[in-house]
Image 1 (cartoon, rainbow, N blue to C red):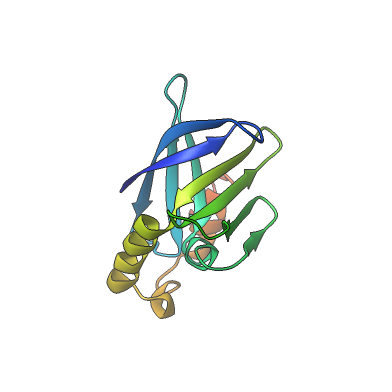
Image 2: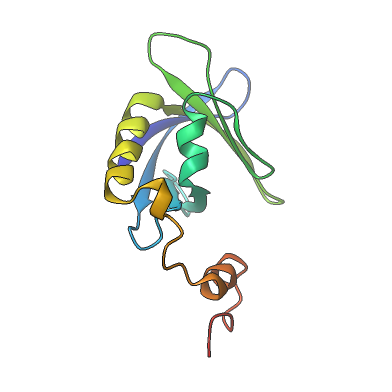
Length: 136
């Protein structure tokens, strides 16, 4: 699913941006978000599905990824803050569209089944970029 977001460049400046949200039923706990830059390379983040879902209505996450609802307004939205050693970015995300899409992912794989069949060694290796993890 593609969403139109606003990246907050500073307190008063918004930069429109597209983001592609991807869901893999084989790894339903993780949503891949590709931020598509107008110029330059895109940026990919792997974000917990539960963090995104909770962030539509309450403060969610800690550390590198946090999400919380904006003040009530005409268009419901949430703030998504991404931080790493290289980048800090704040995005305004449309709540309704993301919520409907996340609800559809939960119909495919409920939160109760997110960890079923997960190969922890391979998952952690991929998370930590260790090519040898999970190999027999």
